[in-house]
Length: 148
Image 1 (cartoon, rainbow, N blue to C red):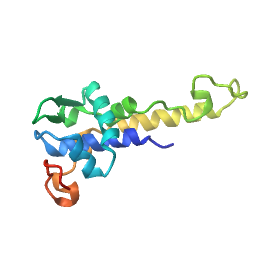
Image 2 (cartoon, helix red, strand yellow):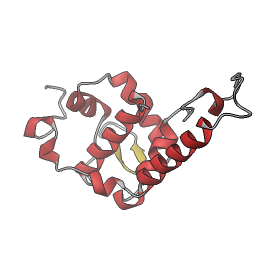
Image 3 (cartoon, helix red, strand yellow):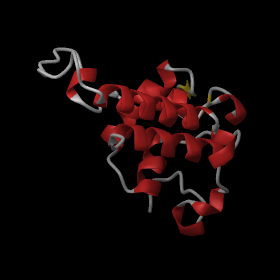
C-alpha cells in the first residue's frame, strides 16, 4: 500500500503551517520549502481549506493558516480526506469483477489490516508531528519575496 503524493503533500503542508504558528504561509514558500509544484500544492491547499484544516486569508498580504488547533487535526481524518480510495484489492473497489469474491478469505484479512492502519493514524494528531520552523528550508527563515 502506498499513499498518493497528494496525501503526502497535504500532510507536509499542514506540518509546515503548524510550524509557522500564527504566521501566514504562502503556497509559493511552501512549494520552495518542499521543492514541489506550486500548481499541485494549490490543489492540495484548496482541498485542505474546504476540509477546514487550513484557513485562506485573501488579499495582498494574505496566505494560509491552520483552520484548527494542531491537537484537533487527526492524521487519519486528513488521509481519508485526501486519498481517493482504500481499495487494496479488487473486491474493495466498485465494479468488482473478481470471481473469488463470494468465497475468498483475503478480503477479510485486508479489511482488518486497513481498519488497523486507519485506527493507528487516528491515534495521532498534527501536534504529534509538528516540527520547528528551522527544520524547514535547511534552517533558513522563509523568504516571502520569492527568492530561494
